[in-house]
Image 1 (tube, rainbow, N blue to C red):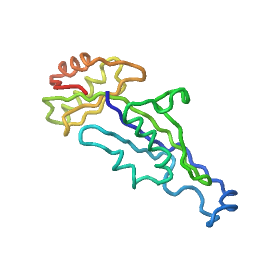
Image 2 (cartoon, rainbow, N blue to C red):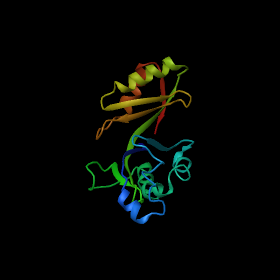
Image 3 (cartoon, one colour):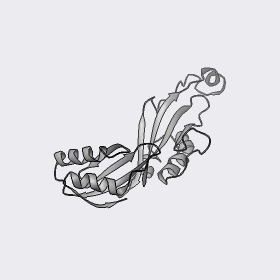
Image 4 (cartoon, rainbow, N blue to C red):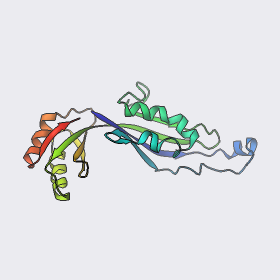
Amino acid sequence: MQHKCKVTVIDKKCFADYQRQYLADSKSGPCPFYQVGDTFLFERYGEEDTFWRMGCGSQCAEAWDCISRYIYTALQGGSIMRNWTNDERMMIACCNDGTRPVIFKIERQDYKVVHLEGMACEKCAQRVREALEAVAGVERAEVKLAKGWAEVFPARETEVSDDALCAAVSGAGYTVTKID
């Protein structure tokens, strides 16, 4: 099983009274860096390692300091916040800015990588995606034609067997070379 981490900005707060009382710029307002609904997807598979490329330097330093440990844990397949949230693959966290905090939802996404032979075009990729999504327990599949693989995301708390994935791909006329 492989792991990605999706980070979504779910809220922003602004405490104007604290800004007036304590800040050099008493009218600094809400965080200008993030907007509610912004999403960031971190992954570490094959040649991809977006933890470093999308993390340090592309995120607000205060926010990165607070959320990077949860993202790293998720990318390693660990429990982000066991017995604290209702799903150990998820955490709600905020940045350190006490006058304008940003609230993040951090989610570990578990998936399998199905390496394929025989795909040549978008029609092939669509056929593979449909075959994989027809397997019981598969929530969604994303085919990466240029990379020669599909990412299969099982439904929450569901096991999807490698044999079932191989059979689905074979039934669509393609060959599985390995599954990570």
